[in-house]
Image (cartoon, rainbow, N blue to C red; front, top):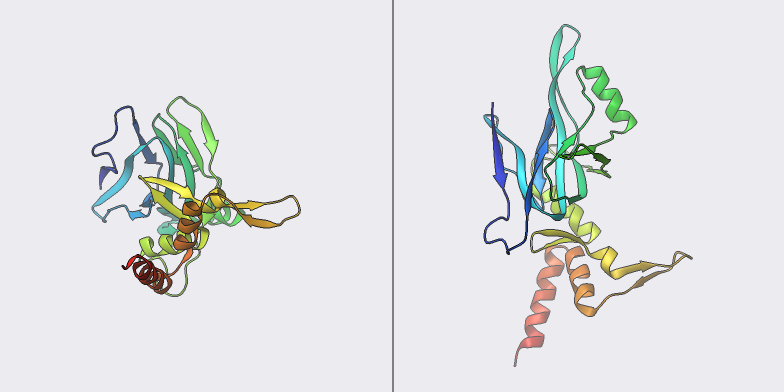
Length: 213
């Protein structure tokens, strides 16, 4: 099975902006990066991408053939989403070695610990979200699943980087009181990112009416 490296957002990079290769370990499949599906097929898997330094959103899953007694079976997890700071150096998303089906099931039931191994030999734990699908073939359209997650959580992408608008525009006091902060432009982007298609269309129509002479 061939392996391919995909370059995202590297055309016409500003001077001084560096890119690093982000790879995945054994049986870890890249699904979506910064809201865009990573093109792969049965014959050609993409297990490396080049990303500019900074915050990116990466979605992967474990998908491998494991031993089950005298036979082998495929084991596939739900997708896992990371909001991660990509460093200047190359890095790899890894898990402990899982060789049997029972071992893998037990490990993911306990809660996996995803690690980012850096080229300098250091590693760090990756905070993750296990995406929850709805209905049959819930993850057949991964771009739509991730888009819905981002809409619900106020996450958007600006100049190729993941931006959590809730962190930029929502403030919670020590007493748990929530207030909207930031300038009006950030607030508008936050609410627009949370709107569904119908609400966005109505808002865009309203904006056009306000701009009409």
